[in-house]
Image 1 (tube, rainbow, N blue to C red):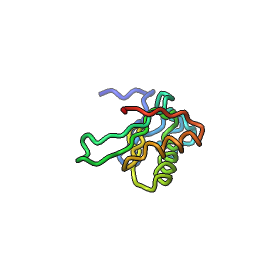
Image 2 (cartoon, helix red, strand yellow):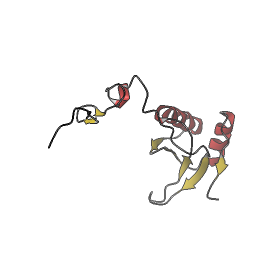
Image 3 (spheres, one colour):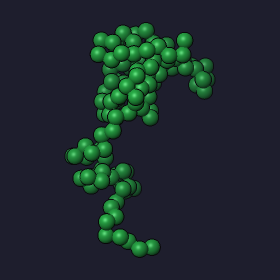
Image 4 (cartoon, rainbow, N blue to C red):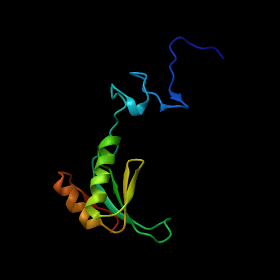
Length: 118
C-alpha cells in the first residue's frame, strides 16, 4: 500500500482518536476543531423501561451542546434528582422516573423542554 504525503494519523491505540487540526488526542485537543454540537435543539424528556429489565429511566434527548457541556448538564440533572445515570451518544439517562423534576431544572437553565412519549 502506498503512503501519501497528505495522510495523517486519525487513531492511536494509546490515546484514541486524534484531532486533525492540532494532531493531539481528542481529550487534550487545543484547537477544539472537533467541537460538534450534538442534538437538534428541541429538548425532549421521556421515560423508558424497554430493554432495562423493568427499571425506569428518564431520557433527555436533543440538547444542542458539545460533549463536555452535555456531560456537565447530565451531572447537574443527576444531582438535582438525587440519582445516578450516564450520558451515551448525546442522550442523558437518569435512573428513575424524574420527568417533572428534570423539566423544571431544564427550564430554570434556559432550555425549552418538551415532554415526549406520554
